[in-house]
Structure formats: structure tokens, C-alpha cells
Image 1 (cartoon, one colour):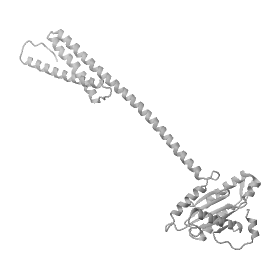
Image 2 (spheres, rainbow, N blue to C red; image 1 turned 180 degrees about the vertical axis):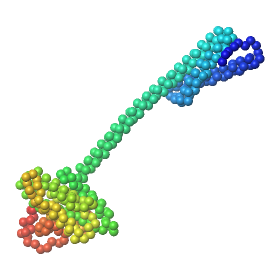
Image 3 (tube, rainbow, N blue to C red; image 1 turned 90 degrees about the vertical axis):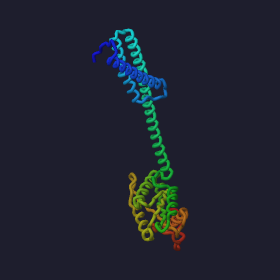
Length: 325
């Protein structure tokens, strides 16, 4: 737009007045933006929204710099060079101040972002450490429970775990779980194997026997090592003596197959005692004791397995001979 001087009133004067009022209004708005942003920048705890930054940039570009040029170009046309120079200087200084405020605000925002990124990185690292520690703690608890409830040699449940599970099973006995039995198993002649071939061979024999016993029972049954060469098995829902006898025969066959330990080939047998709930006991310890007694009857009479029944008459000499087997 081409500018020219105006010597008198009339429409041109009215237009100049409107321009003066517009310039003054825009300058006031720009000053307001500068003041608000400057106050926010001076407060280290305040955050300036991005919309305010846009407003400040608009104030600097559209209201201050452009108005400075337009207003003082008019003054220059009116040959008021001193007034134009002063206004240019004032407008430029306001622009510089506004840009300084903007620079300060942007620097603080950038530092806040960096600080936030550092805090996020620290928090993520702490979370990762916490997860690792939690996983380690859970794994440690799992290992500790495994060690507390399982036999170190055979990895079968130990006596403590067996009694715990037996007590739980007894608490659920009812119309839906009518049958429950305990088998007590003992290796025949295990002491002589240890004496002849050493404890390492005896330990390997126990591991092999434990594996065979575990494979011979159902998934819902619980085979455990309760000490030395003695094992116990919790059987649920086998209601008849025939079913229990069939399972005992299966266990006898599984163990009696020849096994190899290094250069040794051995054959071993087990004796099994069977106790049922509630006829032979109503507590875990009572059932285990009854099954143990039945096992000694099976061993004494070389029957393989025996139920918890009164023993028949027997020759005392035979009992003495098998007592130490």
C-alpha cells in the first residue's frame, strides 16, 4: 500500500484517527501479552500453555514489529523523524523484551522436559529393578518351598508334604470323595545293597525306584519318599480292595524289573502295606501308622502287599528271620 501525507481534515484525517486508535489498541494487546508471558516466565513454578506461546509470537510479529513499521512509516511521511525514531526504538525494545521473555519461557520448558525425561528414566530403572527383585523373590520363595516340601535325592514330595496333602484329602472326604487309601512301601534288602555296593549305588537305586513308582501311579495320586528306603502313596477314589490290590501289583512289577547302575545289574523288590479310610484310621498319622503295620506283615510273610487286617498265625522263627530284611 502506498502511503502519502495528509495536510488537512476530511476523510483522510478520519482514516488516520482510526489507524491511530487501531495501532493503540493493538499495541495495548501486545503489551498485555508481553506482560502476562513475562509474569509467567518470572515464576519458576508456573507452566505456560503452548497457546500462550502462540499468542506471544503473534504479538511480537503481528502487533509489535509490524505496527512499529507501519506507525513510524506514517510518522516518517509526516516528516516527524524524531518521533518516528523514538517509536521505532520503543517498539523494537518491546519486541526484544517479549522475545527475551519467550526465550526464558522456552528454556524453562526445555529444562522441565529434560528433568521430566530424567525422572521418567529413573522411574523406569527403579521399576525394572523392582520387577527383577520381585521375580527373584518369588523364584527364591518357590525354590525354598520346593526344598522344604520335597526330598533332595529323589525330588519326590517328602514326609511333611505327604502328611499335609493327606490331611487336606481327609478334610474333603464325603459323598463326592468316598474312598481314600494310603500305601506304605519299603525296599526289601536295601541295607545289604548299601553294604555291598556303597551308598552311591544305594542312592542311585533309590532314584531309579522313585522314578518307577511315580510312573506307575495316576496323575491324581501322590507318591512320596518319607525317609530312607521308605515311600508312601496317597490314593483317592479307588473304592474296592480289588482295585487297590491291582495297583499294588502294578507297583511290585514296576520295581522288580532288573535295573542297571554302572556295571551293576540289580533286581529289587518292595513290600507294600495298604490302609483305608475310615476303617484303618481317621487321621493322617493313624492311616500312615496302619499302612506301616500292614507293610511289615507283607514283608514278614513275603506276600508283596497286605491290607491292614489282623495277621494270621505264624511261625515265630519265620518272623525273626524276616524282621531284619
